[in-house]
Amino acid sequence: MIKFICTESEQQAGIRAAEIMAEVIKTRPNALIGLATGSTPLNMYAELVRKCSIGEISFKDVTTVNLDEYVGLTPDHEQSYYWFMWKNLFSHIDIEPENTHLPTGASPDPEKECINYDRLLDRLGSVDIQLLGIGHNGHIAFNEPDSHFPKDTTLVKLSDSTIEANSRFFDSKADVPSQAISMGIGRILRAKSILLLATGQGKADILEKALFGKITPTVPASILQFYQGELTVVTDKSAFSTIKEKHPRVNPE
Ligand code: GLP
Image 1 (cartoon, rainbow, N blue to C red):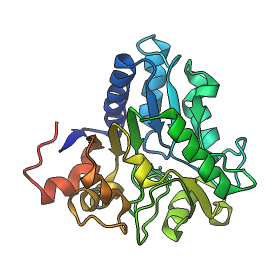
Image 2 (image 1 turned 30 degrees about the vertical axis):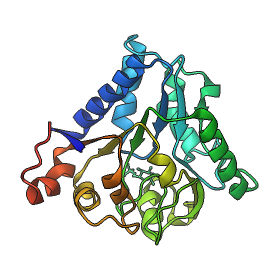
Image 3 (image 1 turned 180 degrees about the vertical axis):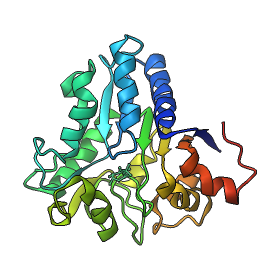
């Protein structure tokens, strides 16, 4: 069963998502948390920083593992996900740097890095809560529409629509890396709970398609319908609008 939480605004969605994360950290101070990048979780990260700064939560014993990283970007590249995580979260909280993990995008051997990342995931064990965003084409992490659902961490060729969507962060479309290392869908589904965060009108149709449409690797997020753990979907009104229209019986919190 999917639990839906629909909030008034994008900012409220971030605050609500941060409350859910904070609950996990309070209940399990040494939680293993799966993190995501993109513009959607920015409000959530800001709220987690605030909660940490007032002492409501501590990341002292928390371990994090990120979903993905661009191939070829060094950690000091401003568009690397490593940089994103340090800029928006890690440098503002009391987490131990050695407890934060992302795939090494600048690895000379990205295929090997995928294997290494899976070894790390095996060592770390089950993720307590995995944060996910959703791409306009239904991707989760960087698992793009495909003919199958990848199980393990893989080297992914980014689709043109993803390169286009993410080019807003780069000087030009040509600067967007064409490949990424992405945690596989099989790995993502091992998490004990998943928090899917989606905001804005642009996500309304794909969110409905993913959560109520056919389960197909051409919409990678649709596999979440088979997820056995606790799935919470936090949205703002705009992102929830297609679900509201097509599934009036769904009653969000
Ligand atoms: C990116 C990330 C995803 C993210 C998605 C949505 O490409 N790899 O993890 O969920 O696209 O991004 P945004 O939140 O900016 O819409």
